[in-house]
Image 1 (cartoon, one colour):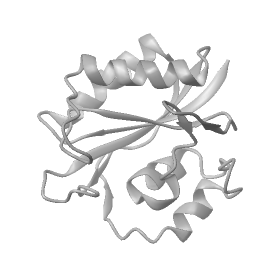
Image 2 (tube, helix red, strand yellow):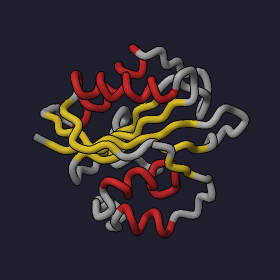
Image 3 (cartoon, one colour):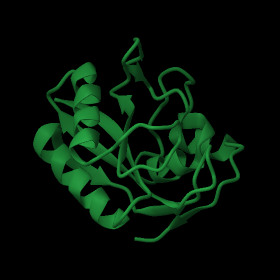
Length: 160
């Protein structure tokens, strides 16, 4: 069994329900959820003229290899109605693979760790909540250190 960290984000319709549905699908299609962060309300990042997001990080135990986890995340997004029309646009659900064990993968369809972890508070705050001592395999810094050094000023507010 391997451990991976997934970031969930949603800013359309019933956002809390979207997170619940995504977590159920991840549990049944990828692997058991070991830990969930709190749910955080954050402003939109990149394209700011849209509704706020709810974000949550899950720690998942899986037997799938990382490329299959990535593929399955995209399938779940599609099952839930995600349509990729524009970069950073509104979405029913977004599921990013942040880490898969300590692996580094630089493929065409699979990049792990997620290349923007260190630049996004909406990722680092929930990630550091459940894995503060987790080590970024490329940057050789803990999630807590990455959060402490992050220059992103976006407000990330715990709501649940």
